[in-house]
Amino acid sequence: SQTIHQWPATLVQPVGSPLSLECTVEGTSNPNLYWYRQAAGRGLQLLFYSVGIGQISSEVPQNLSASRPQDRQFILSSKKLLLSDSGFYLCARGGRATGRSSYNEQFFGPGTRLTVL
Amino acid sequence: EDQVTQSPEALRLQEGESSSLNCSYTVSGLRGLFWYRQDPGKGPEFLFTLYSAGEEKEKERLKATLTKKESFLHITAPKPEDSATYLCAVQGGRSNYQLIWGAGTKLIIKP
Image (cartoon, rainbow over all chains, first blue to last red; front, side, top):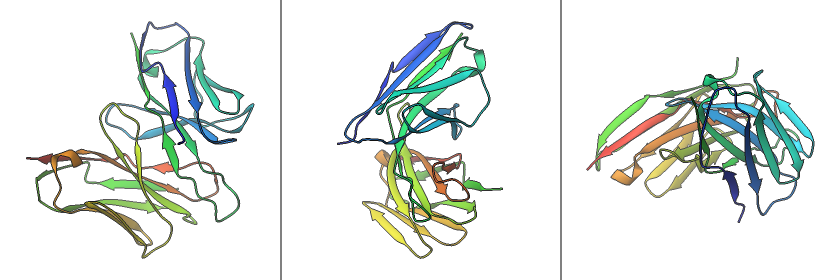
């Protein structure tokens, strides 16, 4: 199976504190990995994606950053959290993209509920 | 601009009352359309991939169809356990890696 683990499941942090969310993927090598944020009652906002170790693409300028220190590990970080960082954070892995016939079904982890107070 | 719009935002049905959810899209060079189910507090669960107009996929009480402009998720004789938010996403345009997501339809099935 190709399981995606995320931790912690829930987190309550004060404004200005640091953040580290971790995602690990089992059962597949060199996956595309993604971080999304989902606000209450809204769709998914892509934050970062990675096609390999050390390769990070950012979609939204903000105070968050991502790193991929190992093939199956993806980390979302912040040095100082803002109230607006509250939300449901999802890690996903996608299929391999190879040319015009590529497809990108994405599979999600259980998510981390972050509340910034 | 590439865009995905889902309607309605919310749908309340009685158990056994069939209906359809809509996902309309504008994207250059569609490579795939994806349907997901999301339960409260959980990550989205993959349901279907549709690649070309005319294609249909089925799973239990769900059937997804695709045209050149939209996709429908048909729910036949739904049960309360089908209650969830259903998300639609498309892959196309210039990116091989990103999906364009709709905001979802919240489906509530009353017993």
